[in-house]
Image 1 (cartoon, rainbow over the protein chains, first blue to last red):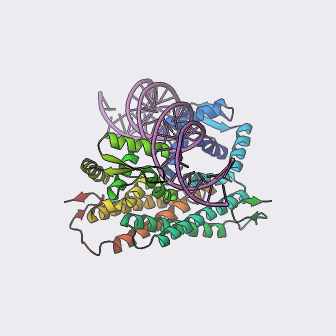
Image 2 (cartoon, rainbow over the protein chains, first blue to last red):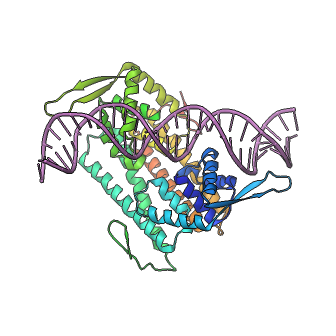
Image 3 (tube, rainbow over the protein chains, first blue to last red):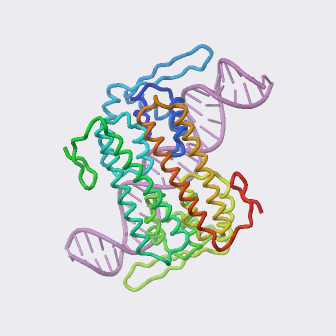
Length: 187
Length: 187
DNA sequence: ATGTGCATGTAACTGGTTACATGATTCG
DNA sequence: CGAATCATGTAACCAGTTACATGCACAT
């Protein structure tokens, strides 16, 4: 049901129709895939039923009517809850990108915490891969060597991006939080 | 049912038990995820029923017995078919990495074709992202800018890896095939 | 008239996960 | 003695896709 909260995040930025959301997400489909209408519309209906959104039908002359979905106060509360709770978990790539796209919904500190969290995860992974490459050295088969090399290259690139982004991101608000080794936030 | 053929590819490299396969894949879990036993074992059973593998139970003193799965001649034929047919399609990241891990099953030319094919796909994507970044410039919200930047960085890194890999891969056998613009192989 | 883009929706299916059950062995 | 690792398996459940159905407007 991840997709529901994801949609909710979009509606928090501005009211949209299901079609709008789909078009928007299609631009990032390569990164994270784009949900099909078959999952998008039911998710929208569920949000409506739970009272997290409201719907306004807008009929325009000469165009099919569109159902504009708006987030409610309750929806905002639930979204906030989801974001907070999610910050702790080990998220796969797809979830991380979701977060990225929803960055507008984060507090500056929350976003930085998220990026730092991801950084430690990628760094761990990178280290683990190097370990594997070292231990089983030489007698590995071609596939393993290639996959290992690929993983290392991508992880290194992501680390570089995270570092440079973290560097130029907080020119406005310096965070007061302390970040532990494991990336968890202390207040 | 992608996972079945993927497993078949492993068994083509050497006979293994389900547990072995799982352990092996866990090392790459960050890249492509690792199937759960709940999908692994049924897949193995299906392969056995289709006659693509055979099973030998090996009971060792003081250890639980292991079921070693071996690919059959028929299995090899089916695997080859799958690989050939798959080379044409637009594959998502996960499938590409599967291919990479299974590189040992490819002919040298097939592997190079695969990498070139991926290269064109990533290049297309990279171009498309740059396009998006250019057209909707300036007034984008934070999330979009971040996701765009991330996508560009990762795509660029993958392109670099593909190029360097393609460069140092074929020192032995120069391919005689002609590769079309779309990456399809001609004989 | 035919097809393409906008716009919404439903039902069947599928691939996969989660959670559970089993059992033997080794380690603390 | 309980916990962890090895090793195999099943059943319930779920998220999401595919394929289909609908309808209007505009261009060819």
